[in-house]
Length: 86
Image (cartoon, one colour):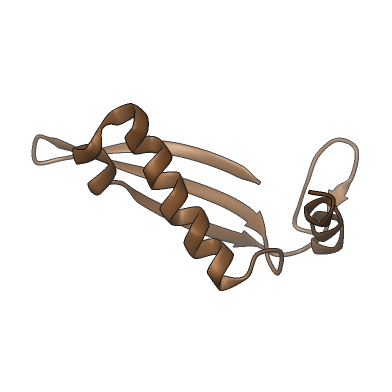
């Protein structure tokens, strides 16, 4: 899982936008909703309640086999095995 934070400035105010990239099929809809809520709350613990209330979080699902690193192409199966390990 990779997260990127981007602050978008609009009309003189900042709206935090946090993007999270995960492999498709690893998280249920309920888990994704929890990731969104908990990520915004975590941001708010540092940035404050007003920023938390104006933070948006997006989850992008990447197709299995379309993401990787120098050592391997990552798959949903690999991510599910990592997830089941705790």
